Amino acid sequence: MTIVLSHRAKALKPSPTMTISALATKMKAEGIDVINFGVGEPDFNTPEYIRLAAKTAIDENFTRYTSALGIPELRKAIANKLLADNQLSYKPNEIIVSPGAKAAIINVLMAVCDPRDEVLIPTPYWVSYTSQVEMLDAIPVLMPTDVSTDFKIIADQLEQAIRELPNPKVLILNSPSNPTGAVYSRTELEQIAAVCLKHRIVIISDEIYEKLIYDGDVHHSIAAISDEVKALTVVINGISKAYAMTGWRLGYAAGPAEIIASAARIQEHTTSCVNSIAQKAALCALTIQSDEMEMMRKEFGKRRNYLVGELNKIEQIHCTLPGGAFYAFPNVSYYLENNRKNIHNSIELCQFLLQEFKIALVPGSGFGADNYVRFSYATSMKNIVEGVHRFSDGLKAIL
Ligand SMILES: Cc1ncc(COP(=O)(O)O)c(C=O)c1O
Image 1 (tube, rainbow, N blue to C red):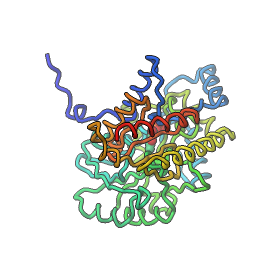
Image 2 (image 1 turned 120 degrees about the vertical axis):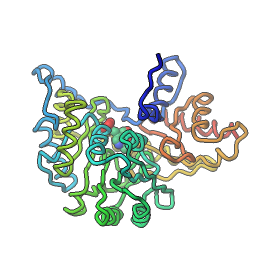
Image 3 (image 1 turned 180 degrees about the vertical axis):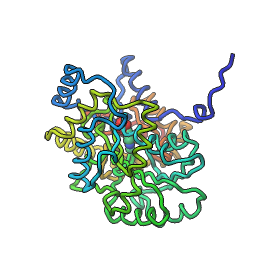
Image 4 (image 1 turned 120 degrees about the horizontal axis):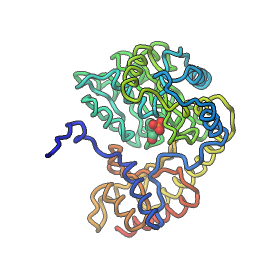
């Protein structure tokens, strides 16, 4: 008997980042010396004092369901963090803890989007935004950007895009950005916020890379522009990237009480709550001061400078210096247009580089930008030094 899958399931594309990482891990397990630039997670371990907090939670039998919103002391710690770091004041019922920022985003999208509502997404975008929107039968509307604006949308472009749409509902903003590393300035955010206010567009502000910013640049949350903007914005953040805790699965959303209450209702019927032990670990991460995070950030900064410097030494490769996150996003269009290997797009280029030169990169097409490939520099300096050589050799080999 044939089982007919839902149109939703059939339409879903696999996450290109997860696919490439799984392939690289499999090749590694087979004994092949692959350098994996595909992973979007810190290569550092979760700090020991955080792991200890989780062990204590288990020993104290903190192992039961919690409220769907998350334990009150964690929500209080998140509120304190948002106030101290972002000058944002939230009440406990305006914060929900979810199984990762990824889950926080889809819960919020589910709370605000009806089928056929349009969700504006600056492009290049993080791979899951479009898939999540499509899963809800809402419509992703891509807003292309390029190096001329450092991969950032500008207010006029947003205004124009909104005017052309029948049901514009949400803007997803991601600063610092995955994959480009772009960081929006306060002035840029003010201009974008003014357009959203004018058209009553809900802003989902994904700030998961907030703590990974370089060269003394500063992170600004769009919600902090004014109380009116805050009332239209849901801030998304989490512990995965800043505290090297990707596998713990904990993120959060902070925003208007009615959106958070709806997200909690959705969570009650889907995942119930976040793993109780991870909640205690996150509480520790957010309340205990440690210099380990700064050590990680500095190390990422050194790797960024080296990698981008070396990439730009390769003939016909152009890579902007990313202001934040841990990705480099070089333009490879010259090699897509001028090669004798029948390589037509970023997927074919990445397949060639993985098979022949044993480096795993994520094709730009997964981020809506086929002329690019993404390097994650959340890997050792030794791997970066060797990997960039292999990249350069691989490109020379196809000309
Ligand atoms: C831009 C962006 N948002 C959200 C996430 C998801 O983070 P989490 O591990 O908290 O689900 C990622 C992870 O790669 C990301 O790059």
